[in-house]
Image 1 (tube, helix red, strand yellow):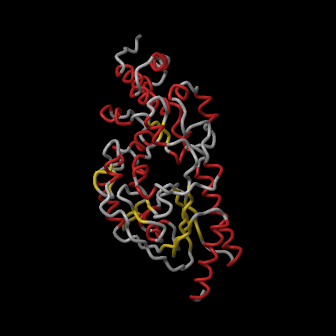
Image 2 (cartoon, rainbow, N blue to C red):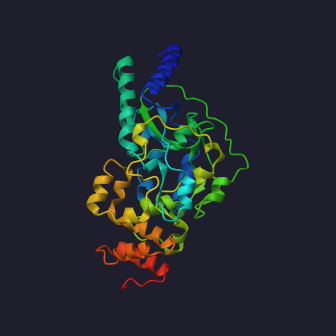
Image 3 (cartoon, rainbow, N blue to C red):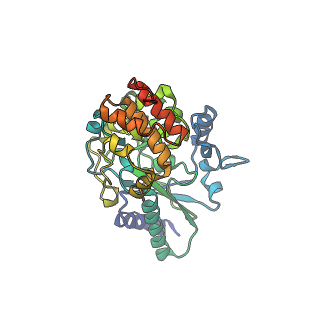
Length: 358
């Protein structure tokens, strides 16, 4: 394609993306520059914790995740997409301030975004194919070794905030990212300027001090990692800092000034299900495994399983004010068949001065 045809195709892709519900479309090249060195240093420091997949997908020359053309041979450029998820859910600060309520990261209160975003990206790829004919591509939705925030930043969809998330002046950071690796030579868009300035609100707000320095997150300390990725026991020293956060954490986003006027999503599927935006800890702790699987069908939360669900809520109940309902709920799980659950229940009861034996 000549320059005029390429420019027209980019305009068409943006338009088709908007028609499919995406809030922004960008175009990135395949050179991730210093990102690979940053990734190597982060991994060498052990900041990925148990997320061994972060260190995988290597080649003789380096990390494939930092080299799109090695990850997907033939890739010449990347189409990036942004989809807002902020819904009209209960006030996050009010939920966090209520120790009897459960806080769930707002990206997870509705339908699992993976399938929805992947389907939309596939539709966009199909639309491109209808226009230009068959071409090589691969769709990614946070499901493979892709440095999506770096690619999105390179394509002008935002800048990397000090919390390491992507930020946009109008959309804040409440959005999902997706990519289409293509064998089309589509000129990259220009990156945008970093607008964090001297602000350290996200760093100051982190309940576990996981943002160890600007632009560097130690996952081993992050509440999202501890409640979602970590399979074993949550370190005792960190449990009090989790408060009532039972799945993920939004504190750094809540503190960010750029999120004050972040727009609401147009996706009905991202609306809260089963009052997950303001449910009581005791009520969620009472769910049987069958109820957990049924009520969280189609939710990202379901992937952690009932055992870790109970582990997380036990910690939150240990941080809740002492009361008869709290003690009764914990004692009701004191003989749970899972050693992981029992350990956290014993800890929670001890926080209230009660022995598990009753």
